[in-house]
Length: 325
Length: 101
Image (cartoon, rainbow over all chains, first blue to last red; front, top):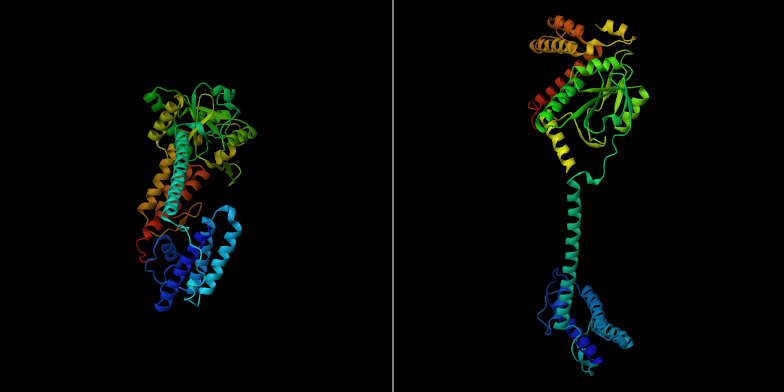
């Protein structure tokens, strides 16, 4: 072991001498010193070295590297010798800074094999590649898991349902009190609006009526259109009745007391607000959405103002077909 | 029309002026008025409408028709919408006159 250490020390000193000579004689160029030292150590014979930046930096890194090497190659049962030899190596290196002739001063013990050989280099390479491959594999599996999970979500409402919808109790346009249970068993499209709406609600309701007919025509599915008023103070039962009957015979109109309407609007997350212009004649600002509810009165999908009749029809048919799967 | 609704609003009556026929009439009058505006867009607007919509005297008659056929809130709503579209249109057209900005 001591011989191994001695050979290491000798090599270090030789390298250091060469480097020092080079740096003294040649022009300094910005090449990282560690790589040159690594080159020097890994080759069994000392190849011609490139110039290094500063003597001080190179010397310090040499010292660190030398200590690392000597620590890694010595056996664990010779700690004391190791530390003493490494310190000896360092001290010998410090002594060699200015004087390059002192190399053979401490000659004596022969060294068997160097701390850094081709074998150790190969082992290092193998370990490194092994680690990289292992973590790469792990990462690939992780990414696959994530992409699979996200794909599964897209294929249906299995990611959990939106908390839209809920029980309500309102009066329909015939004056009868109805709850959400009366709409169960069939698909329904719910639209919130008010009868005094200038242009948007009429357009949307016309679209809704046409879509209902088209859905019946295309897929033979019965969808119940529902109109819920967000203006309970002006929309009485008769008002709603007169209003909805013009659009579609099956259009159900719902109204109620302001508290009931508030409850329904809250459960469907509908925004509505009176634009207080004058007391009698005002408009109600509201969100323009149609909610598709399944036969269990659970929310499936919503359709905004941007859909025209055909896209609404196709969207509803698609959702119904997918739901049935 | 507006007066009628104000009076009848207190009673439990159907507001017929929001039903289909009334709506159609209102839309027609509204479109007539706006097309009049377009036709006479080069004339100087001297009259003023509900929400600050200016229009020339030539369109005064169609304006009256329009106001008669539609509810007050609807008139205001449509006028506001018209002004908004006009403004955005002007912005879009104006882009070409400003170069290198």
